[in-house]
Image 1 (cartoon, rainbow, N blue to C red):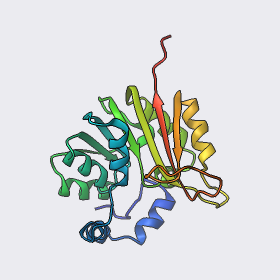
Image 2: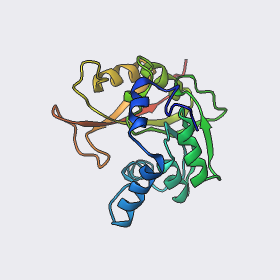
Image 3: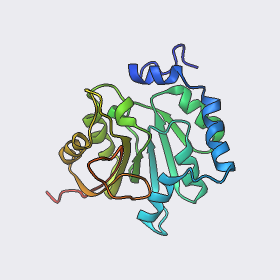
Image 4: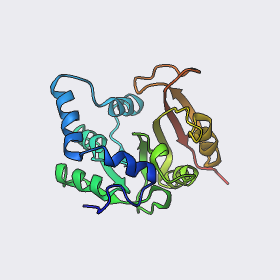
Length: 208
């Protein structure tokens, strides 16, 4: 375990980790599923997008592995990475058959391309300050031609908030084409009062 939970990620992530026991964190999701709550909105979103096709998925900022594990259960291939080694340790315990990496998304160097990359769970908010553009570019470098980058994060009002328009600007600079913008993983329309955003972009390689 890390001497200081979350060290090496960001100060904001360290503050979040101070309030969270990872075992109880996973147990909360398990309890919600046991009650019959829908806890796999991201996986459902992906499957509506790709239909019956099995895909190679990269869970970017995978945390304790909830999305990647669910996608493998549904017959897809998934790889996960997170900069917090405690998160990867939990994911590896739950699903040792999945390929997990401790990695900085802004400097990612996996020898693989993916059909779908998902960055859920407020990754742009908890990453190192001003690293969002580098993260998006790095993820695009791991997308196959025609592949999708899907991101979901809260829309904050704090002075240093990372906004939807910031993400759109960085995605455009990384040669992504915007496909759709929603306010939830259930594909509710976006609006000016959204508290959350789900961004769907596609990478189409230049013919030059």
